[in-house]
Length: 134
Image (cartoon, one colour):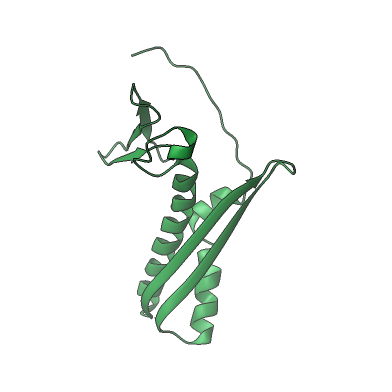
């Protein structure tokens, strides 16, 4: 199970996110929402998770097969239609390298097998509990 910790203090909307292994990143709200745009917005982080996972999954698969995948370029758009209460995610993928059409088609299928894609395309349950101050 993945685990992260986040902390927001006095600086408006600047969020420090840490992993148990010690990695740190900064998230923030864009200026138009009152933040200082010091890092990815929370929604950009969610879209980034899908893009990063897709990239890694494609690279691992191509390496395993010995295919010449020089580059996979992933673009993810994440939006919300409040009227329909629906979230939409558009993912565009392009490949460079010496790949035939059959390999490209297979890589497109593999993209749908990345763990984050599976998480986002299946039911999600979020459980929240209040912890004592530490």
